[in-house]
Length: 567
Image (cartoon, rainbow, N blue to C red; front, side):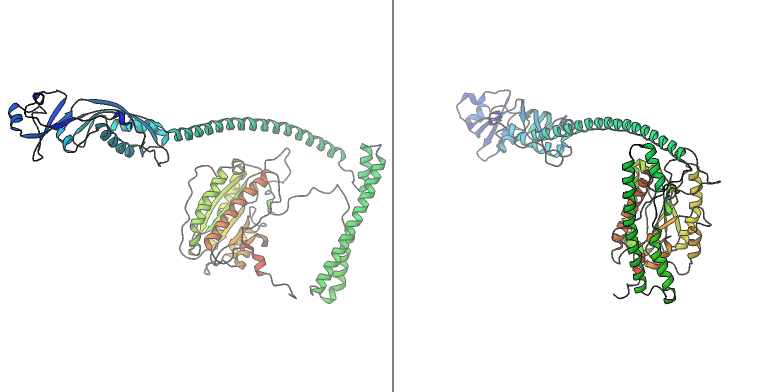
């Protein structure tokens, strides 16, 4: 506060004179306060001067004239501006104040000289308590709160009435710079969002053009296949076809024939060498009985002579393994036209037995991450149907097979009672999968084989045989919708048990002994990666999706394989 803005409340002070007539003159805006020789402070009838008798008797030794008038000022709280929430930024504050003295004796007793300083110090303290609850962006709300606080006036120190207080708050220079940067960033984001929408529209239009071109190319190739249907395709036929399309390119055709023959000769030689090395390895490891040695040698070495020749008339290759769509009901005849990528039923089966207690929190966090990721990727979520089951002494469906949508309410895994009862888990899957698959067949004609991602952390309950129900679940000869089971073992779960659960040895993985919580986190990361990669592979038309186990897990088959002989 500028010193020139001070408001002196004690206008005059001095000893009382016995014969000075001005001692008895009264100013209506000034209160005369008297002090006796003993230090007693008196004020007569609201501040009138003493009479002649008191003056002659010198009852009072000192007189103080205290200003009673109203004072109105505009002050800026510059030295200690009120802070915003967090204390990083402050509010630049201007205040219109009006105040007056209500108790002149207190003014004299406390020797209050500058009334404006008292008011300013009081307001700085009060304003700080109010504005600390507001962020810097809410200057108007903080201003309204201050003005509401002082709407009816207050008394400061019992002697000064603050009858008017109107504050104006604005962010300080540093806050203004911050808010400007924030606003610029928001506007820049709006511009970028609009540009993104435009670019996305352009990309969609370009994609539509590419689809038209692709459709034309597919139709052209289909007409070529129809025209060439039934023709044999040896190397000579291919050369003849090339010459039909390019009658003046005889030299190039001969060059291609010679190059192909040379390449095949090299490959045959490599195959001969590989087969001979294979036979030597088998013989050296005693993998062939002596009486079979000649026959095996002839079969292995003769395999090289059958090195494949180029032939285009063979049947088209199909996806291997369990990524092939499930067979259609009926005679299985192909339907005309393009087919959708298909739906993927995936079942996440979690062990809640006491052996997994240390990993329950990690499993709950992983489940939330899986659903959030799928909900944020609508393309993958459109083809994936996800169910969640848990088991301990009993098995339960925690989330029925459904599409992952934003805001879905997820259950919480908890530690169950008793050992892990695998038979209950497989029985529950055996109930759900055929029913779910039949419902999905109503939505699509291309249904992928169900896939089970199973986490087991305990030894199976010995009093409950589970091999029979497992066989009925996974036997494709009797179970049309038999799933592929990917088994991951943690803690006490043994490699032999995990291998028996998995439908193929390469789908069984075991965590190293140690931290169950870390193993649970890695399994959740694997499940998220597997679901997203599988969905993307189906969307991209990739039938050969390879399963890579959780980070740090080892294939169960490796743990059971005997060490190589001679090492």
